[in-house]
Amino acid sequence: MKCGVGSGGGGGEVNKWQRAEVVSNDGEEEVWWWVVVVVVVVVVVVEVEVVVVVVVVVVVVVEVVVRLISGRELRLAYDQTKKEVV
Image (cartoon, rainbow, N blue to C red; front, side, top):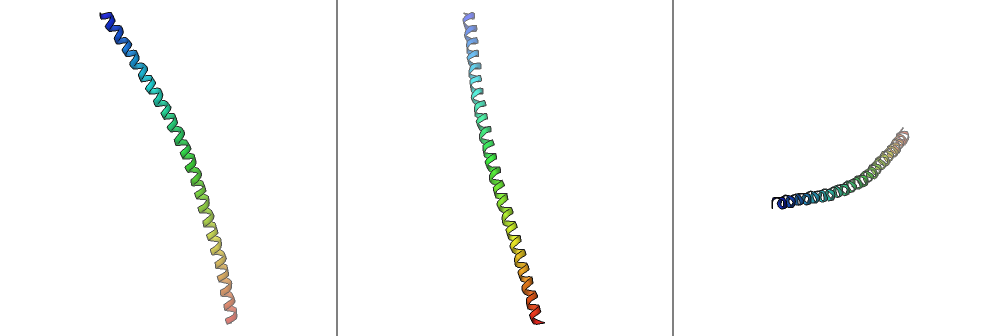
């Protein structure tokens, strides 16, 4: 009877370990999927951020150029009116 209980208990322990391994394997697969998802999201976000940064830089450069051109035009107009007054 003791042998039966011992072997039954041993068998139960093996099943518990096997179940634990299966659960841990599933967990590892889930972790890998999460890693893949996080990497893809980071890459997409970084690309989006790069696009946003490029758009912001282009807008700033265009604004600076427009201000320089309008400043030059104002300066030329001021010089023109100054010459006309004199």
